[in-house]
Length: 197
Figure 1 (cartoon, rainbow, N blue to C red):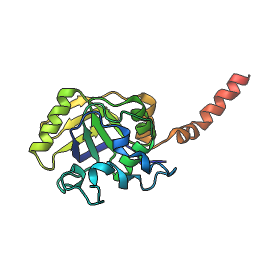
Figure 2 (cartoon, rainbow, N blue to C red):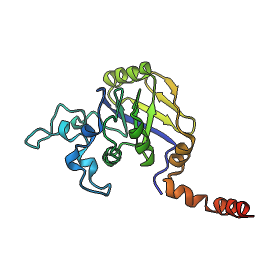
Figure 3 (spheres, helix red, strand yellow):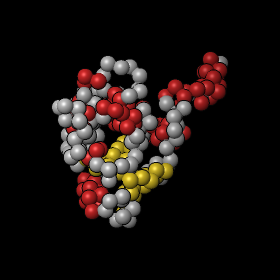
Figure 4 (cartoon, helix red, strand yellow):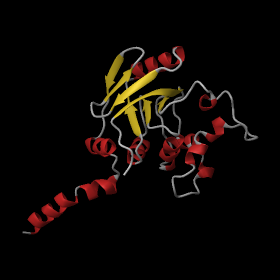
């Protein structure tokens, strides 16, 4: 069982870059491990640290005013190779949701399979979010997964987002695919009995 995801209000971290691929999210040299532990330490590794291994003070994750459980990213986030480790790195760092105007399909599915909510918004709404975050330190967003809405709490504007009904159910109830099957075991067994007879 994972943490359930219903209503999340949080400050957010802006990453207004387009076409951020999975190798930028978690560089290939860190993919040797097969468990999820430790990947958050290397999220955006080549942007967070300089060549000598020191923190880059200009990168957003290293700025003390940019904290929160929501990452707001530019268009086409998560493109490139199919690596589940990208979702592991984002959740390992502490993010519970990523907001963008477009996600690569494989990244989007990997995210939902690993308890990370990808929220697709319109380009206008995304631009408004970036402007709000820049103008108001500590600006918050509220994501209501059951209602499928995201709200810019400073601007007072909300937008509806789409999500696969099955993945939504899993996120709301904190289930992965195996948990979901186990939770429906009695229904599956009843169906099998009916089907056999």
